[in-house]
Image (cartoon, rainbow, N blue to C red; front, side, top):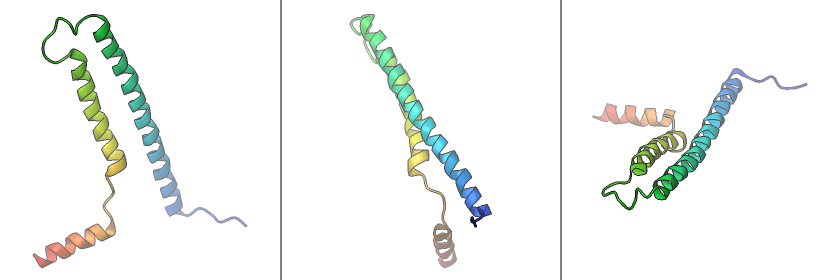
Length: 98
């Protein structure tokens, strides 16, 4: 006799699948970032733009902004954690003491 999957297990499964898809999407974005930016810097180097330009190279703007977006996406995916019951209880206790 097999155990039926509970509502909590189904919800957990859906959340796990969603998280795995987000992780795959993130690493796909990182791969695209590396390939596209390598091509942009190569174009910049091969066109001789680096010899007659002062200041920030134009690919740096694209690389910098895109890198910032990836860092934020990675933080949201790997570092951010959901609010737990213990977090709520601790905050309630802190507010009660204040």
